[in-house]
Length: 76
Image (cartoon, rainbow, N blue to C red; front, side, top):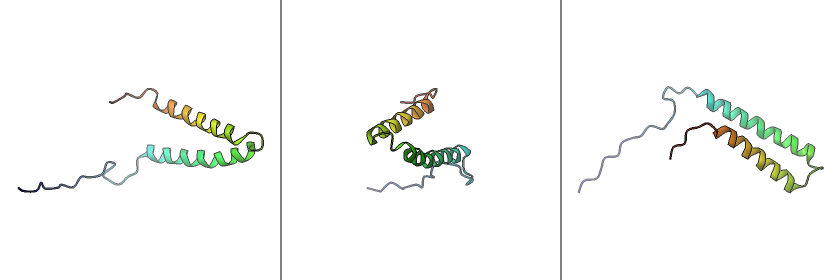
């Protein structure tokens, strides 16, 4: 029995090596939001309990994810 020949599969993404502007935008927003979260937590940390801060972060993250996927076509 002969073994099947494996072929190389190119990774998804731009072939010419240029970065997609949406990727750079997403990374930039993530870094800025992550960095600002530390400043906000330090500022309001004395007023809120750790549980309240965690709930607030989860609610904000859920809201952002909900807004980002609204209007997209679902593929099953």
